[in-house]
Length: 102
Image 1 (cartoon, rainbow, N blue to C red):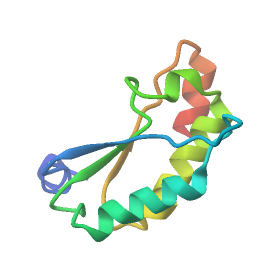
Image 2 (image 1 turned 90 degrees about the vertical axis):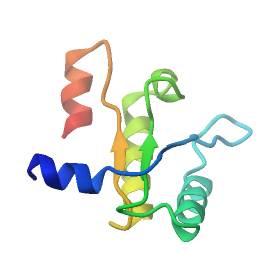
Image 3 (image 1 turned 180 degrees about the vertical axis):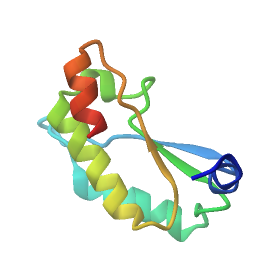
Image 4 (image 1 turned 30 degrees about the horizontal axis):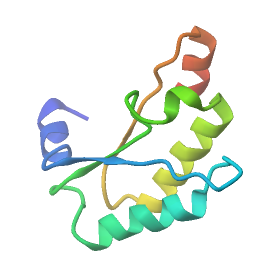
């Protein structure tokens, strides 16, 4: 993807998506999917916005690699190619960064 395509693809507001948890502190991926679909259904789509999932300022630093990967996978599946989804692979462990990037 060239820089012009990226500018077209990443335009509009960048919406931070909160990671929902259940009472037992496990991930609530069903609610995450519902929230992402809600945003898409109300106009956050390619060309008019971008979803930011798991940013370093959110819940991701408190989650393990498997949880982070589940959130990233769920977000991309829920978006179904209708909106750009940006995720974070920041970590203090290089091995975890490599795993998250794959």
